[in-house]
Image 1: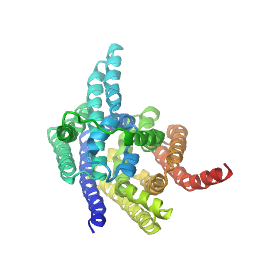
Image 2: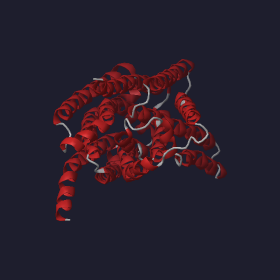
Image 3: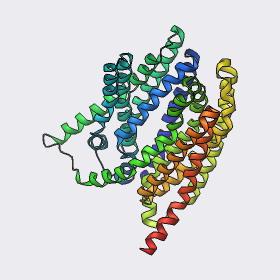
Image 4: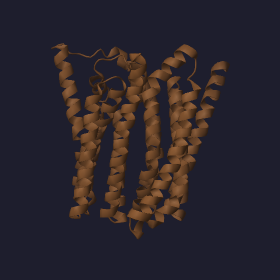
Length: 411
């Protein structure tokens, strides 16, 4: 009985913490849009997206392989994850190095941006490690506490900034970096406690982690592809249409994309279960997958409605143009959610390379369409480019098993 209850408790905890994160993101997004003009809101969004890209590189693709291979098989998940992502420290330092180079070229104001972004990347990396460790069997208390303190701190800063009238995107970025501090504390404490418990020898058995690292590297292109799918529009919009266009876009996109988070959480938490189902029966049970797809549809439509309500009732006329983006972003959210479900099934089947191909192709399609559509259509072009890119991923998810099975048959 305990073995049945534990996975669902894990899922419920993930969804509860995600609900907290969604509420915090909603409040912070609204506060930033109220405090910053569209161009400033766009600058903040751009720096945050750069931070997410760097975090993806720092994680080295190990999250999903670690969950599927080490769930229930490790007593010290955070220490193992910290060992696997040690090279991520170098990646986290890159924005700071970039800021130093920019200062040498005369752009001294970018030094602060680079340092704050590096702190954000390092903290965000540790936050993802804490989440992954929890899914694999770590105690919920630390994950809950870190998430709650982090999100409450972020919202508190956002509300204070609105009341005081802070209109500097750099200061807002600093609040994002500061909000990751609880995860730094959790990881440092877990690693230190693990070493103490193991004694002076305290060395990890890195043998089982070798396969995780290989699978992570195989999935790294998929991780970059996924980040490019989600963030290419936000990186290209300020270049092709200006930061004001990005500010209007990200205000509504941040609300609608939250619909995919509960779906992604469920998929991540079920990877170990799905892998065992494949080992026993040869496939993942279809009923829960179909139900999850139906939930994804409801969440996407609901998020679109909430986005309209926010723009109409709470924001100024400067953000009213974002209403036209809701249909495309709703379609994009639903297609993205479905592709996450199907990719989870593929990971459970061990098709890591196939997932990387899917994400890479989808990212390329998204980037090309952004370059083609944004100059003429602005944020509307970015929204439809994302929708088509996610749709391509969804189609490829269905084709990968067919192609690889036929190839294997011919081989």
